[in-house]
Structure formats: C-alpha cells, structure tokens
Image 1 (cartoon, rainbow, N blue to C red):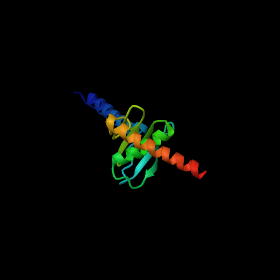
Image 2: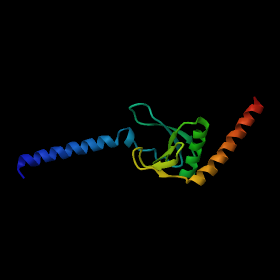
Image 3: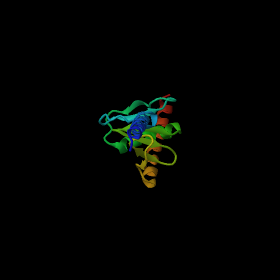
Image 4: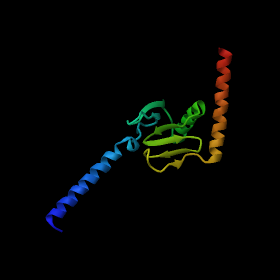
Length: 137
C-alpha cells in the first residue's frame, strides 16, 4: 500500500472510531446508573440523555426493582423504563425485560406465569390502597 492510501485508511478508521464512540454516548447508548441497591425510573426528554429518579433506595435485586416499576406501569397504564445496578428494565404490555443499554437485546425478567402472578398481587395491593384512601377521605 502506498503512503497516501495508508493515510486515507488511517483517517477513515479514526473517523469511524469517533462516530462509534459518540454514538455510544447518545441517548440510546447512555449507561444505566450503577448505585448499589437503588431502583431508578428513567424519563426521556427529547434529544437528551435519560433523567433518573430513585424509586427505591434499598431494592435487594433486579427482580424487586422490576416489581416496583411494574406497580408504576399498572398504576399509570403506560410503558415504564427504569434501571438497577447498571441494567435497564423495560415494562410494557408485552413483557418485563432487561438490557445493559437502551439499544441492546432485551432479555425477559419474568416468564408469562411469573408476571401474571406478580401482577395479580400488585393489582390486589393497588385495590387495597384505593379502598383505604377512599375510607380515609
């Protein structure tokens, strides 16, 4: 290879590496918080990195955090995204799943039967809270 070809190839590689690096820091590549035991809810302003709000300060594991976020999903009726110790948690009608980044493959947290059991218990909790607040009001 000629010196000119080597220079062009080197510049192309630097440009490609720069594009990859900047893409990893955009909203889709934003890392989830890694704070030990903290369950986070993520909100996504347009064209910005996620904003994280703590949901629980002493969540023992990813499953507990997913259950806390599922309660928010059932209360609000809209998809919820959260995070636990460096992993994103995604909750929607189809599944509760987890991934290391927003744009990576999502793996199920609960199977269908586990989710049905969890949501049955969470709906009972919501109903009891609703009954309690009506009796107090």
